[in-house]
Picture 1: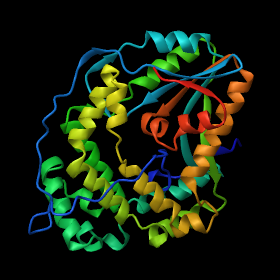
Picture 2: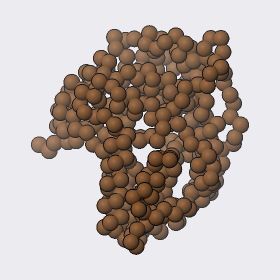
Picture 3: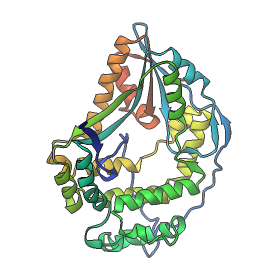
Length: 340
């Protein structure tokens, strides 16, 4: 029987290497009940045919790495002018996927069936508890304000783990703002790579879990405190929607200066930090997840630069432009970096 690779559910799997962590609400913005006042969006979301950003060129000794900075979410109704990217992928020898993390376990089909009930339970609060029972009162009050706005009377979400509930709220807020979570860039790159006969190279940093059932059990019973993750995701819904629209518009029209001026402290960074600091991670030697992920990508990228005449890569724009981000690290290692 062929052994399948099984990835643990979303509660054990964060695919984003954020360059920074989300911030708590600014002091003095809460009302007497602890809720943050609702601000309506002021920026309209662009639509139609848009150029997207240009590509960064990283080179050394005649070898070139072309990097497209990606952003998420993007405007829900744009058509990306992707001819430049398609042409570069067509003449490249390798395509590097964005950095990510995964926690995997090698189990067979029946092993997956056996783990499924435990994984499902891990997405809900223990002993049938509701969010009101597991969140601090002031935080729950803030949640209720945003839930009423974006999720309405959805009662089922109240029994889900805080981080799962916060993700549902965030998705609803994004949709309400006119932003989409449907991929814009990847389908184009995937099609171009296939046409060029290139199998994209994963840059995922993988951690093997020998005892998946025990890991899920530990996760369920306190191995990961996701209240901090919940609070930062909620704060993003409260405060970041106008900025998300501005960033999405900047990406769509190719405004690199605006992308530099609009760094977003991604709430997923707080979730990554909470995971890295959890007993679940510490007990398995998974410390420094973000730094290890960046180092893993750098090693793959430098090997591609050494071997190929041209390579194409996708990187989150914030990680690309950060002071200690990928471009800065490549430049520090002697590569020439040219902005679009």
